[in-house]
Length: 368
Image: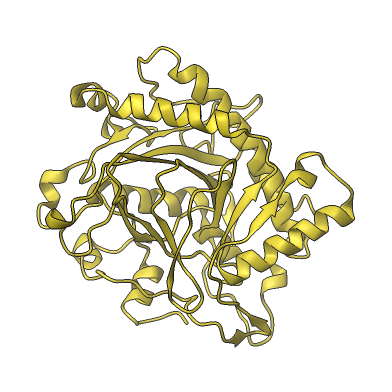
């Protein structure tokens, strides 16, 4: 099934609208307009506290996911010092000569991981576009014991750079994020009134990518129209665990359509709901537009960890999120097929991939 729009259609969408703008009540749920994103202490799930304590956290998470789809996560067990070390390795990678980075080009890998420069995998084919002004380098987790080959989506196929100490830092760090994500899906299940382990099986061998985004300082005088460090977009998977450096520049749309800042908060992840989880919840949980611009005088690093179910999992509307007057809004999808189409589009254009459903919303042709 084709989930993408043509490259010439993508260029039409210079500015964005989305299905979550508007705080009015729908299906008995009212979204609040927030001026900042909430902070959720995840420590009860990390130590497997009692059910009442965990349910209280899940209730906070539910409200954040309905109102804006973004929240800070603290109490997850990773110290700021480790984030700082991960950022230092990112700078060391991107400060290499271009030839060294290109040896790890994503276009040379069957795993969908590696280096991409400004303009995507083939910038000469996009000379009339306004690509995001960023470089990226993506990595995956290792293969787990007993994991079947089907649905791995690049696990165990990272192109590690020849920088002594890089892999030794990043490989265990990725594994820590896997553990946090596997606990977080339990909080999501409780937040929806489902059994705590409802999502466990499809996240036992979860799909994931750790991505370095490297944003050089922007020059306002040289920017093209609708050009950003990363342009307004939604993420594709289930949810994202992002850590920012101290430079900042991230913004998200609230329910009234205003762009609000998401400044760095020491020791935290920024968690956001992505498109597959919005499909699961029939748009109850908000896969929200966000963007970033680096107007500082130093390069910015951000490190998102994109989480999605095993590649062969089927995602369709959850029972608690449908009913009379609220039928499923999306067809069922196979995770790997859905994600690969959008990732391929992003690689070609140097801008985030846009699904047909998202494109229709932007053009005012569909959605709500």
